[in-house]
Amino acid sequence: MKGGRLAAAVLAVLLGCASAAPPEDPALVCPVTVSDGRYLMGTVLEISLCVPDRATGEVLMRELFAEVAALERTFSRFDVKSDLSKLNRESGSGPLRVAAPLAELTSLSLQYTALTRGTFDVTVGPLVLVWLEAERTRTLPSAVDLEAARARVGPGVVRVDLAASSVDLLVPGAMLDFGGIAKGWTLDRLAEKLRRVGVTRALLAFGQSSLCALGKPAGWDGWGVLLGDASGGFAGTAQLSDQSLSISGSLGQYAEIAGVRYGHVIDPRSGEPLTQARVAGALAADGARSEALSKALLILGEQDGIALLESLPDTEGILIDESGQTWQTSGWTEAVRYSAEWPGDED
Image (cartoon, rainbow, N blue to C red):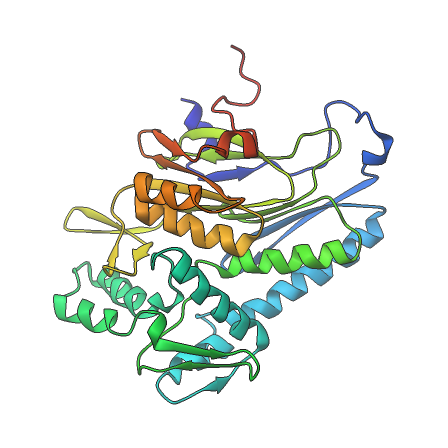
């Protein structure tokens, strides 16, 4: 089966700046391609840069990875010394001055909560804790515990003052969790840095979930990626150029309780994790927006989710279920030159 070649990956990134044929325009030639990867933000960040010389590329690589490491120390909920951990511990105690990136991303995330009809919500932290405990004990949370967690979730539990760089978690026990947007937002910052220093062709990829493409490699229509379906099989190929793509899977991580698989993606409105195996991809101009919308598409589903993306400018998406059935926005295929054929397969 073709899908076995993906080794259960949701998305495999085809990195590189090489071309099967020389580009027609000599200006498109990429003298040097520098690629490297580091384990950051809970996954591998892979970067491929088209640069004038290797020394320039290696310096940029070090700067990019250092910037991501610094942001991880701000946003990590696992690092007890991070700004986020401190903020969560002091919820209900009044405004707390935080690093500017944390205030900025909190403010942006609240905008995306409204945009996604409440399906993307960084205040979901209390519900995450409840379901982590359910996973540990293999016991479903009680209605009382779920209701208590839901009472501490929602845009009304947080207030942001960008001028003062402060965040106030108004309800004791409220918690922020940026696991669904921090990677895309971080790639946006890296892309801005690369553009400032004149790098116009690059691919930035956080594992199998968040990608940001600058320009396109010489001789290609875009940076090529493989998309998988919800069973780990092959779904199709896409090509990215000056676009961001986020892939979210409902059961990429899950806990089986009483014979039911409960995924790591939680619907903040109901407090319940998703149980149906699906993969959602959202395309946008920036990574933060694509991340928020991929969660919305996954939760809202083939009717409301596709309709939401159709209503937004410069946004496309695809939803794939375990059987390989797909639903997509009207412009998805053209926007990423999507093909359901395995690369190199003959008719």
